[in-house]
Length: 222
Length: 224
Image (cartoon, each protein chain N blue to C red):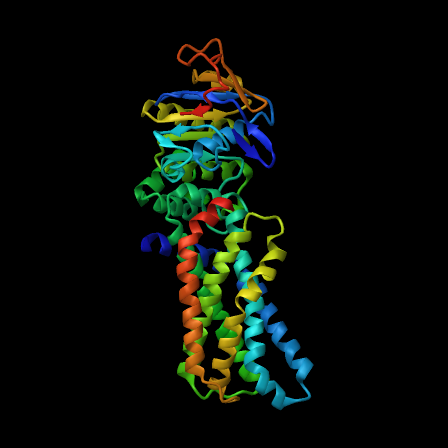
């Protein structure tokens, strides 16, 4: 099963590297959103620093919608989704592979956007360990929930518009937990960062297990 | 019976196919040929009735069926941003085949040299079709389900497909294909089955192996 999961990871990441959709479209979109936030709050540098964690994670979630949609679009484009069903690959491996590939893209996006936040919003990182752990756990949570809901809407003609409506409320705990953890890491609020990290890890674990167990049935309906 | 939306795409299918047979599904557009092929691949569910493919129940063992069949549909099942070799290798690894099988398949479909390293998105429709067939060859399926296998192919590639079909049947695999190119397929001496309005009407009178299609289809709807 792990071999099959890595096969999916390799395929999805190779496609993203070749197509450069992430680099040429998703990253510029995310940076643009971040810059617009900076424009909107630019007269108040203190407010920018205070709200930087929340603005960062809202931007990540918006960009994640594009990455998740794209992950399923490449399978649906020319019938590869049917081939995946016929391939005999365990649905759990497909779920795991797609989730890991999305998480890797999100982590890369977080690194680039993190640099943007430091430059644009003039924030200083006080706790690097917490920052890294929260970034990874949040990416895992968004990727697992996103893979699950991406499969849920994959077979529908309205999937591009339905995915945000379904997914954003579901990942609200990730937004809250990651924002609090980053506030602690940036030293802009007295949040208990490590406690919020627990929430992020729990969310990722729950959606990881739930997604793995239900993915086969979702693929059947897609 | 299989439903597409509210409408029965197939109703009244009574068809037995023995291993090694080449079966031609003949019928007008929208008759249900594609649905029948997808049903045999385990991609559609039966709304009512029973069916078995390669000994597996289509109601409860569709995953087992899928591992053993190859379906060439209207779409290629390939990724535009991967090269021909990468696509074929991906599906080969997914099926547990090795790199020798990949190069053998590419060779059989004349997809060697520069073509093998070209991204699928940059290929012509015929080349994409050949790459799609190559990605099925590596699976070594026991049941081939081919929907318009000659579509978009040049003469040489059509001959290659015919050779492949004949070779698969000789090796003991079963081939079910739907095509409008009846004259071309006639050389393969297939058993001809007519599908009209979602109903398998009858085996062709020239067929010497098929069952009597006039049997009571309403009582026993099955695909085995």
